[in-house]
Amino acid sequence: MKSILIIDDDPRNIFALKAVLKAKGFTCLTATTAEEGLDLLYAHSTEVGIILMDMMMPDMDGYEAISVIRLGDNISQVPIVAVTAQAMVGDREKCLEAGANAYISKPVNVDSLMLIIDEYLK
Image (cartoon, rainbow, N blue to C red):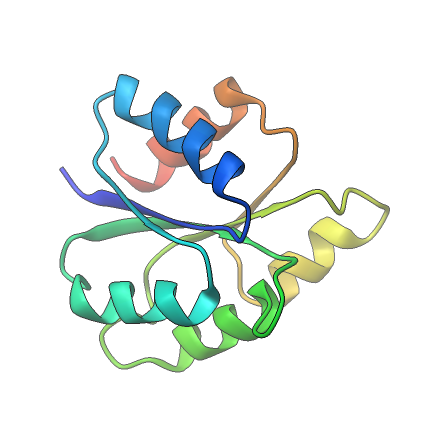
């Protein structure tokens, strides 16, 4: 089974997502910066089946990280779920236009997240 890469600058979000996903049988890789996440993605490109990307991070945000991934040779097709506290009108569209495959707002609804993950990791 493919791994899930969680990129979020808040360790509490990573802890909560990872706990839920591990309980459901998934293996998770985690990063607290987009740069670290990109390094993990390149190092484990054949293992990562989906990325949960926080959109609001210091230094490199999720939008910039998605554009880097979409231009990457062997990583450009990895599905990306934008995970964000930004739940205003237009935020979902902005994330999808940036190259995300799906969007989910925080606090994350686990059932909704599992539907998205199941869709991409069949």
